[in-house]
Length: 408
Image 1 (cartoon, rainbow, N blue to C red):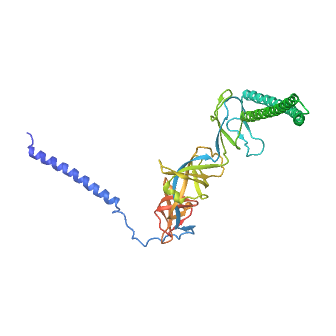
Image 2 (image 1 turned 120 degrees about the vertical axis):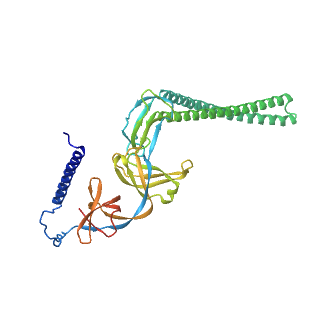
């Protein structure tokens, strides 16, 4: 005989409710045990005194005034740069230097460095031709002077003959007036006088002609001397010398190349006199003056150097509205032409809180300092840092003026 369904359902519900109630009671007991309900408690007493703070090396947070600086980019250049080129068209016969070599110019001690030699055979031929022409003109001048001497002697001779024939003609005129000479004798005397005068005039013309030959020969000699001077100058251009003392940084010519006037052959610079060229905004020029000391940063070398303004170009670029400023730098190892640099320009002032950099430590990447509290105990505090100034560093947030920090 089966059990009634209602009684079976009620009994199941009561059994499940009993299980849930048992779990709840168990949880309550465990929570009370964890909370210490079954452990005898000890009455709390007064707090333990703090240990006395030891002697610490501290320093106060200071407020200082610093210049407000703006960075302007520039390029490292040599103060003296030159593109050495030929002054004549000739083939390169010999190259005597290599890239990186030091060269001596006319401004140095000793003879200038010969960098290259050009083919000078054509110039040598022109020089010999001009010298031969000069010697020929010397001989022509000597011959013309001999002609002048002979013509002058002829002039003296014809002058004496002319005076004698003129005296005879006058005498025959007197005789003819006195009926002591015939008309034929008078005409003969006149003819002799005319011949003597013509000979004297011809002798003078010969003197003038010989003097003209001397002048022409001397003029041609001067032309030959000028040609010699020009050829010698051209001959000196066949030897390429260093224009100043420096370093050869680039060579763009080889033996056998044809050198043309104005075509660069070598690039020279003076590495011992570097400087930074920076194009500055027009608004910054009022803060600049020649001779002013400025800080220059060379990022590639991790180098900071003190420079001096050598020149402010008195012209603004209308396209960029910038002015070129040249800052001389002391010679340092690694300062080569073309390096990127930053010119740090102070244009105003600002005040900042600073502490010694030794007071800062790091946890991971977070800077922190130990600050002395009102009871004289150090407390850690995270701070935000700014620029460094030697041994000091700016604190942007986290500290107040005159607070004391511990130096590590």
